[in-house]
Length: 319
Ligand SMILES: [Zn+2]
Image 1 (cartoon, helix red, strand yellow):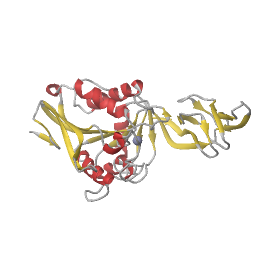
Image 2: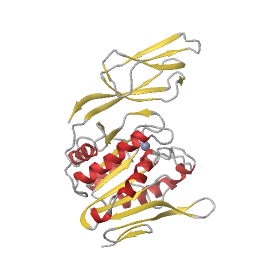
Image 3: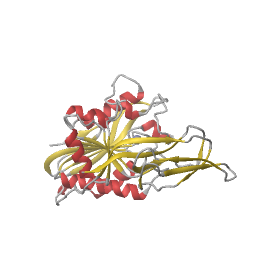
Image 4: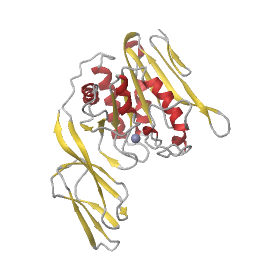
């Protein structure tokens, strides 16, 4: 059966790329998101993958661009639908939010086809995503520094919770943040449609981080093997899971010097960072309120009073 997404149309054993039209730019030109259909020779499940719903999060694009050329549809069972760049306008100017309506797109799902710019793009991609049996929404910790992890956002009481957790484990970054997300996230709302959805967070970088992209590529292939799109056994490895997230800001202005490494286990009371003046004078020492894992840090050293410095993943266990 031929499968179509926007202008991409592929019969069994074929790949096609095209555009999913969602409106016009300010000069009146129609614009469309880059999409692809990989239609397996054999029938099976459907996987939907998208990247860059935050316009400065480019690692997911790096993953898609490396995965698609490696796929041989004659060896695939099932179908893969992909949107290479969701936040079209943000991507053009390397900006996190959609500049047309100054909105973070991953707060606008399931979208509205007659709504704002972001809502229209969300509606178009949500329609594509909900044709699938499994959804991967590729993100990263924006341009800050972050470990590679996968987020389960539906919340522990959701009927699809176990399936989402299983998908996160199948992807296999090593770390999972298991915490109900804010309204409007794709990984929060698509499970309401009965579709296991996770949000792989592939590090954090300005531009491309090859190491995180490589983890993402491996994650997509892990999912394809685990859910039988591709042959080959795949036994997921245990994941380190954090159930909470504590954010730390600076009590003073100055320059941050981290005393723990990203991914390091920290204990309650352990020093996370010190802040010094431009002349090296110590100004403040900040310690961990709870034990956990240093999960994310700011990239630049300079901070104002109250400015974000780092996050610790808490309530850590393995599954
Ligand atoms: Zn993001």
